[in-house]
Amino acid sequence: MTVKTTLISTDELASLAPDAVLIVDCRFDLMAPGTGDRDPGKGERDYREAHIPGAVYASLDTDLSDLSRQAEGLGRHPLPLESAFSTVLSRWGWRPGMQVVCYDAANGALAAARLWWLLKLVGAREVAVLDGGYPAWVAAGLPVESGVTVRTPTKVDLHFDANQYLLDHAHLRDEPARVLLDARAAPRYRGEVEPIDRVGGHVPGALNRPFADNLDTDGRFKSAAILREDFLALLGTHTPQDVVHMCGSGVTACHNLLAMEVAGLTGSRLYAPSWSGWVSDPARPVAKGELPG
Image 1 (tube, rainbow, N blue to C red):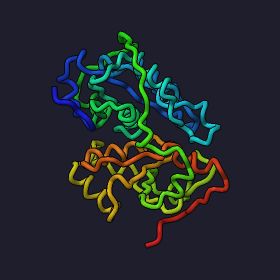
Image 2: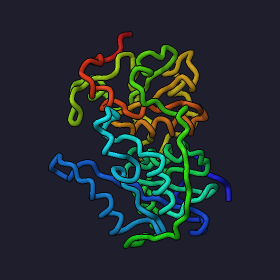
Image 3: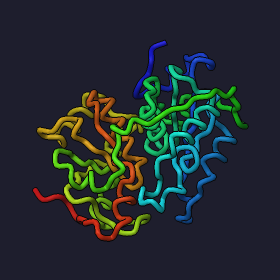
Image 4: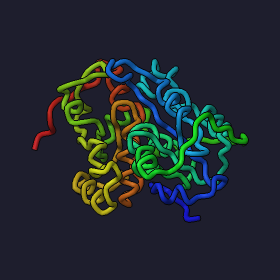
């Protein structure tokens, strides 16, 4: 089997033997339809109703984040502790070298890219996001199943590579040789609307690269060549290693990081607290509108 490290197609996933891959359903809906209220249980309800055969479920709130750490100024979706994430992977029966495929209902833009990135943090190479997500699987007429998948647990004890992300706000502010890319939609970046966080706007000097710009009209990722051209235009004279990604809470920013990896632009990092962490201190500066020139 060819190892997949960024994206995998529905046909490729369907061809894999069930015991050769760990499939993780990361569907998660922040808002209840028509209400504007959080509905953190919707993704799991959808999973129990129908999912890709053999998939386990990952909750953005409880498996891929530690909401108890919000008071530390680490944003709305703080990183889980290493020990907690190790326990999650053990429960899923993950072992080093196992191919992992993550999917969600938003073409990787929500929790699937977050899980892809977290696995990269613990040194996993064999992890890919399903291109087109669950909608592409269903549209292809491929089988689904209901209920809950239970896998034989393993025991792993893993550690994050702290060189791949930033938690310290002062480090972000004082790091001169970096390009900060904000993955939020342009109106939120400009500060025209802010439906979630304390204040709208962006970190001074940050550029806007909405994660939706990584996708084609069919909801799949653009080609590596197009993504490369897009990101190189933003980087200018900077290298990929100078890039730090952010968004509202460190989730959709992973989509931009994944897109750069698809484009062969490796080595960028994540500002994990992102905008919600930055504005947790009212003394930090806020910029609004577009960057000049």
